[in-house]
Length: 331
Image 1 (spheres, rainbow, N blue to C red):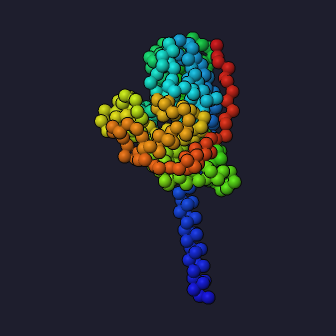
Image 2: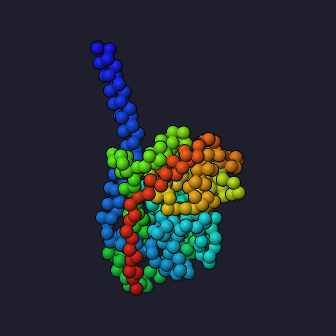
Image 3: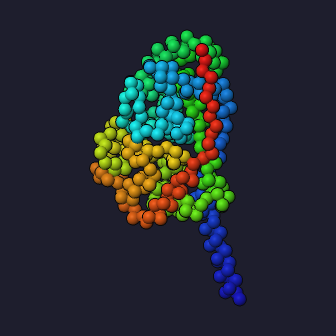
């Protein structure tokens, strides 16, 4: 009888420890901080309203035809659905448009990490010749000619009014409200067990285990915000190396978030894969081009069902859609 009780108590201890370790691991995926930051951003309503107008206004481009929302379309997961972006004069650019979902949590911005703040990121495409092709000094002059903008900037920034820095601040204020939460996975990880399908649940175990996706796609935002060469064939883009000037960064690009990933096809920095299934196949092979390949890229030997389960898990990361209304642009 004593042995049976001791065995039973040992089993309870193992169950408790297993639950505790699981809870410790799972807390990294909880998203209250996302909600808190989003609420904080929305609290500055005047700045967000101004930033939203600027974000959707094509007059921020040299052609008066391209807005931030042209590439970061809320109907396409805040991307554009193209393999690579189309810029000024219908120029086909070399990289895919990354989503701006949850970018407020990124310590670096763009595929190559060349910007460290959302304010800097917001101004980058506006003045890039291949993208929106707008001289910032000229933009300040043009916006000052619009009574509605003069009034809106004064309300938010006082006598500073319309400046290059304040344009960036306003757009960044709006972008900080663009977050993805309340996905099936979020509900499941918070204790609502029926929120996740069996396939997605198996996929999560693979994600953390055999497939080792968590090596790069970690935390509640599913990114380590680091740079990795994934062995994509047929690309000569230097990636992070163009910024760092470090040979080890050749062909390395920032790990994108997996939040709402099913909405942001095609995939990879050059948009070479049309589906999540294609992406999983690439990782299962351990990449293709071997030059400067990340040591994290190893053949996975996944079964057909395991591949499908991983895709099911990634689709469970699609959050509740934000309602986005188009702003009335000032005259």
